[in-house]
Amino acid sequence: MKEWAFVSDFDGTISKKDFYWIVIEKYFPEGHEMVKKWKAGEIKDIDFLSKVFTSIHQEEEQILQDVLDIPIDEHIPRFIRRVQENGGKFYVLSAGTDYYINYILEKYGIKNVTVLSNKGYYKDKNVHLDINPENRYHSDRYGIDKSKVVQDLKKEFDTVHFAGDSEPDSHPAVYADVTFAKDKLQDILTEKNVPFVPVTDFTEVEKELVNKGFLPYE
Image (cartoon, rainbow, N blue to C red):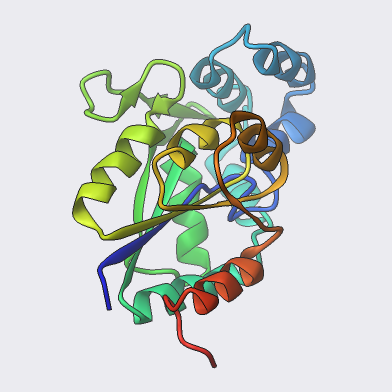
């Protein structure tokens, strides 16, 4: 089988709810107004997330409980295993932070996955982002440039699949061999005339990969 990779966004794609919404709803109601400014392009993504994640003001035990309560696509643990068992490499590519992603992967026993995201750490009752401008994938807006990551992976693998759900995912979608789009990403890619496969969950993604011969029938 040819060398191939599957790259997935985390918030809203693997997870069913963005972590920033959990924080806003539980600890930072002022964030609702910030969301409007962010969506309007008045605030950079990384500045928005930094403000939200440093407005939690809870002990780490509570933050970790909130993290572990994040709902995910029930099919994703099996999906990742099937990809790995059939010659594929799995990557999580997120403009959020690896702080909560790593805990979620550990909770569900998901192993041998490369997480490419903004570094995060707990300090003084909040989650802080450690953004390195010297990182080869640095983005002034998102913290991590997903497009550059996918372009690099295309040099390494014969085929790169990508899955996402929102505006930041529209940029790497241009370079992926196949993009699986959920929710708002479908409208954005339609408007940009970028081809995609519309999906609602990873069961549909798996069926498509079976049909294309990347995964065997069961």
